[in-house]
Each structure stands twice: as C-alpha cells, then as structure tokens.
Length: 362
Ligand code: ATP
View 1: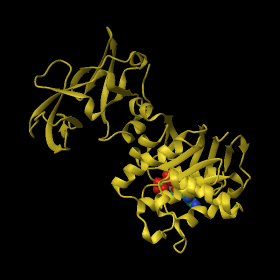
View 2: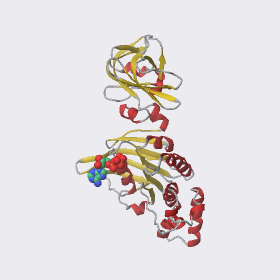
View 3: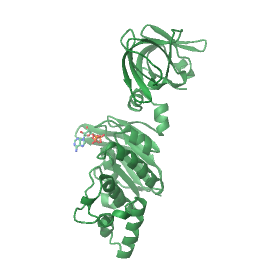
C-alpha cells in the first residue's frame, strides 16, 4: 500500500527547532497539503520524508517500512520541485523517459509507459519537441509526467505551481488533482498558497513555527478552525478577530461585549463552560447581515473604505473604540463611506476563542 506516516518527526538546526513532533498519516490515494507561512517548516518536513534531510528525532514510515536510515533513492519516492530542470537538448519524450533509463527499463516498455503518461497529461502532441519549443504549462506537466512514469511508492510536491502565472496555475491545479486521484498513491504537497491547498487537498495540515496546528479537510479547517492562527490564515478576506469580554452565560444567552457594545452570541453551548474573561470573537467578512437600524444585538461600525470586488463589495469599517471590521456584501447593497453600519453576526458562523487562542466548541 502506498502510504506515508510521520511520527513525532523533529528537525533541529543547531538549537533552532525547524519542525517539532510532527505527526501525520497520508492514506493511499490521499492528497495532503502542508500549508503555512514562510519558514514554518513545510519544506523541511517534506525533505525529511524524501530522505534529503536527516530527522533529529521521530520516524518516517513509507508503505509500512521505516525509512529513517535509507537514502532518497532507496525510498522509491517521486518528487516534483518548483524548479524543474529539463534537458534542453532532449525531446519531451526523452525527458519523460529519463527516470526509466536509471531503472534500466527496456526500450519497448519505455515507449509504452512514456506514451501512457503523455496521454494522461495531454503531452502526446509535443513528445518530439524540445523544451525550448513548448509552453510553461507543458513544461510543468513534463515534470509531473517524469514523476508518474516510474511506479513510485508516493509523490512529494514542493510548491509545484508557484512559477506559473495565475490562470495557468488555476488550470494546472485541476489537472494535477485529476491525475493524482487516479493513481492511488499517497501524496504530500507543500504550498504557501491557501487556494492551492483548498482546491487540491483531501486534507490540509496547517503549520506554524515548526508545529502542525491542525489537520483537517478543506471544509473543516475553514469552518472549524482549531485556533486563532488557523482562523486568520484560512479564508479571504481574513476572518475578523475581535477582542471582547465574555460576561457569562445566562438563560441560554452568552453575553459578549465588544468594545462597549453588548452583543448576545448565544449559540454554542460550549461557551457555557468558559470562565468569564477575555475572548476573541471570530466572524468571517461574509457572515454579517447589515441592517439599517440598531437593534439590541448589533455591532456598530463606521464604513471607512469601500472596495468593489466585482459581484461583491468589501467594506472596511471601524467600531467606535477602534476595532477594524471587514464586511463583504453583495454589490447591490450600496453602502457609502461615512455611513454607520449595524452588523448582525451570523450566530452559526461565529467563533469564540479562549484567551490562549484555542477555539471553544461543544
Ligand atoms: P518557505 O515557504 O519559505 O519555503 P518553509 O515553511 O518551507 O518556508 P523551511 O524551509 O522548512 O520553511 O524552514 C523552516 C525553518 O528552518 C526556517 O526558519 C529556515 O530558516 C530554517 N532552516 C531551513 N533549512 C536550514 C538549514 N539548513 N540550516 C539552518 N536553518 C534552516
């Protein structure tokens, strides 16, 4: 079975801990993205799986076999890097066949396998061309073709699409995902692009400062972020994170005070178990209803900047004690700069984070 498992994987560079106690299992046929800001330890984790970096502690298990002491070649992994080097004097077909030369595959079988992956990646037409005579998207597909032409245990991708322009990236995401979903191999993709992770991954592992903060499906990490960091990292525009005071739970209603405004956020019974005190309330910009009149449970904010975004409009607003709030409304909702907005957060989409940053949930 093509599976990848890392257990308590740790990497230190001198005193600096680049990856700490990382645990992750990737099933056969599953695509897991390592996602996080620059320097959080994604590439180091991938390199330890590949054997390009020696783990300080912990285990790498591929297809059920502990790999810690095996060199990269012996791990039978296919890696696709951001910078794919193609041999300029060889045709596309010869470039794709290159890994098979090392494996001493016979000529007839080599041709069959190259043609097969060329069909999968729509490269049949360009097999006889040189790398200088093809597009960037085709070059990227050759890098993938070279990886799948062998029969590796699993695939590792390091920022595979970051060199492509936005449009091409968009179409390549779908194409690579389509190819991977037919191969039944465990795949790990490193990216700092959340859209890439949200569209390509079956599950996302979100990292910060060497730690895996949350592992979950794209929907889970978006809808149920484990902590303030994940909440702020996933979703565009960013989730509003508003400092507030949780006053306690009374008659089925949790009272939360934003600045000086009392708001009832009584949806999540788990909040009942929280001691009164400082909390952070998270509301996504699309989870507000703008009403014209102040009612009891609205947040008041002054619209300071209006940004048209096509079908929607992004409003930057400010509460009377200076908290910034981003609100996205449909374009026909004509809010003007200087207008006082009365905002009702959608209770079902309101997150409460305790003082230590962890989400409070039932
Ligand atoms: P990016 O998205 O920028 O590539 P990343 O999440 O992949 O970032 P890593 O490349 O894994 O991050 O690096 C994690 C941390 O380890 C960084 O602070 C980096 O400076 C440090 N680091 C990486 N390689 C080495 C090394 N060989 N020696 C010392 N420190 C290193």
